[in-house]
Image (cartoon, rainbow, N blue to C red; front, side, top):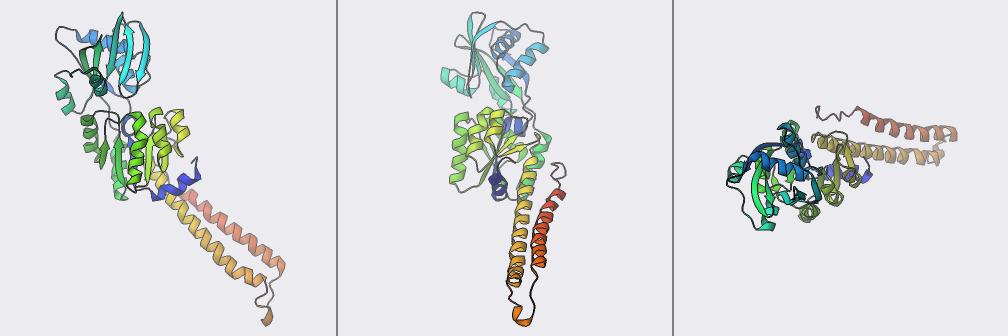
Length: 331
């Protein structure tokens, strides 16, 4: 817990906004299909894509490079690498400009997707296209496995009456497939990284108290904008720095643990406040001699002991929070 206000606010949250990749899913996508345009070789398309993506740290890029290595394809030397969030990467490979990206890339080029993409979309795959010198030369289908814990996390949040929202830069069809499988209430797809914070603000304008859960650099502004920012412990340093709460694991059920801790801490605060107030309402008048007319005077030494006893009771009551089981699996 980096921010005490986050601990206080989490009990009032009524919407939890999850980033998809690496949070609800394992963030370890794999290439499941490669489709070249007519007259081209699938291995050539994959090799060019992997060569362009070799310098990228994005999970999709690592999946493409891993697929090429598993096929023992030789990667070509790439220069001039650049990356545009939610669009794709660009590099010069074998003397040609190679770009790999999603739907935003095709719109930027005014190009059409390959025919096979429609089938992939129905299967909920992540679709990337490979472009060489401005012409689409093929497509890649990738799948990202949903964490088994995500289903339990969503169901448990619903049991608490909390709305579950998912946000992602992936295409709408992919996002909707994941959303349906998990039973998520609302899905925001095709959201650029710079627009995630605005989406959080839009939920807040609806009167929602929003907790944002993310792990990437792109999630940092949204984590800062949310009422409570929750970073996955295995996430990037920037995301962790922007959040008020950092989860020690990548288990999305840990969000329930934060809610439990917030509510339990609030109960202890109220108990201690009532105890301290009630105790002093009785003890202070006694120490002031309110019963002196009937012959009872509280010795100062006894008053000092009673004052210390009040502090001890409050501290011991707070220590009972240690009995709270925050194990996500137990929750």
